[in-house]
Length: 58
Image: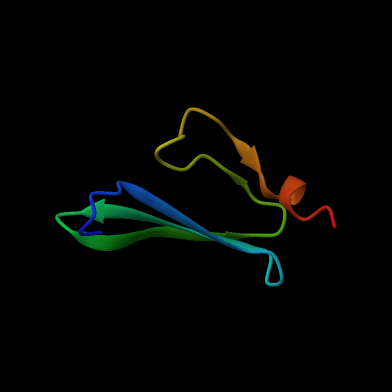
């Protein structure tokens, strides 16, 4: 957070989860956790809906 990165997404392909964080005043704020086939619109790309099922194609 101290480096000025605005957002961070952590994707765990084994657990099939996505966690999204936003940098607020130098601290990471968890925006949410989504899984499997959720449809998500997450900052900084909230204008786009992402179908998480497309990430787990292996």
